[in-house]
Length: 433
Image 1 (cartoon, rainbow, N blue to C red):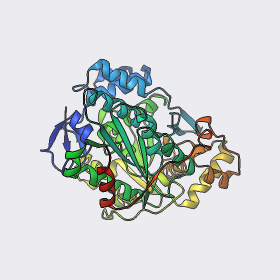
Image 2 (spheres, rainbow, N blue to C red):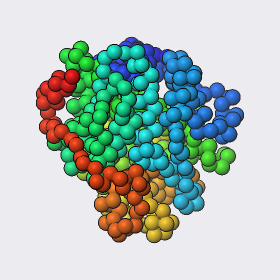
Image 3 (cartoon, one colour):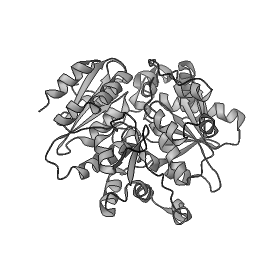
């Protein structure tokens, strides 16, 4: 299968080029030239398949023409080495726990698959591949863990100084080896801008193979489809879910829409925004106008210029009314986010991280008009990754810290300060061996 740019459908490349280049030269994003659909035979048996088998069938629909079946199955099985439980917190109110991977965040699904796919594509290459990634928190840790020790690949993580939690920062700054962290004096949008500029620069491309591990890369986006398919089959037969997606860079929401295009029966999608509510305002009729992000307790969603908006437009053929027919947006205040954490803990004895709390609030707004809806809130990170917020809301010591986080406390942060300046970043990259 070939992949085309959202800016120019005439720009067609094979999968390997789409994965290893990450961005088209016209600054669009790659999508399949045709969106696959899973056949009736799959839907006859999908509820009885394992999570890994569902992942393989989805990956095969997108990548099976380019990756041999045995290699693709091995990539999926190795990447999906942990579960994604669906928890019914209250009647018809579900939370999909996507934080049971190595770094306790949903980004583990895409990062682990992508690392293995890139390693397969570069198995015979002599040059070092440099993977650039901008993070507002969880992406950096997941990518660092997924790529740590992978031969012939090095990772450079750009994160905004003072805008990720302490534990998130430790996850991406303490591994060493082939992982380097740059502490950028700016916002996530600045980090994302630097990454995109490097990927599109002809001089850097001639000097070193560069790609990205953000959701702009199609190989990180597709694996996120796996858990949409997995969670929907866990509902009672005949119930189509409303997926409530905490939304920042919009990759997770895009993956859900791709799952629907594969044939998954979905009632509706709800985009849950914090104060950085560009998609919500667009769905309400305002012009799309990127703006500086604002800091909130749900920091991974603090995005003022979401990259995957281009893919949303492409999927709906630039038809805002069609998009509104499938997606509703809600903006949630910081106060309501914190109140939801306290309320759910007190009423249902369940702990939400700040991002899932935004989703919980948006789901509640949706149910006010659709009381019979079965809502699935995507919980994108373990609450223990945000101890400052959870301690403030629930009281110190109320959230158990998993050992894989607790062990980070005494590790030494190693990060290189970096100005939010393209010239400075390029100069640093050119010094890499």
